[in-house]
Image (cartoon, rainbow, N blue to C red; front, side, top):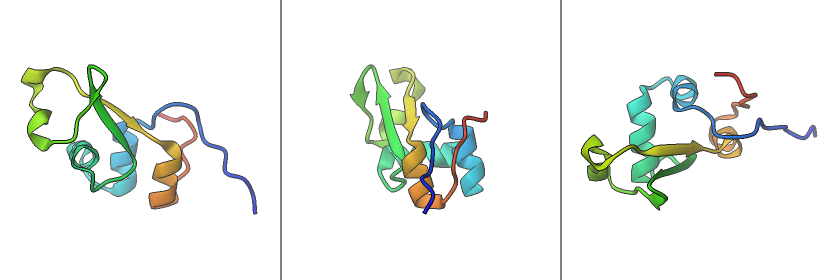
Length: 82
């Protein structure tokens, strides 16, 4: 079996949304709520785990989507494209 080579860094939310055929907000909500196990959401270095915390008045949320976890869930190999 060939070894899968993943690009470095986080998969953009827009790419994950395209892979799932959903809107980017669906991906963000899924990661935060925990039912889409492909990454993590943080704000000021703290994990965001509640949909109520998505309000922009609290500040920007950073999303990390793991290329390996996305591949495990969907079979899609992210090669670094935007």
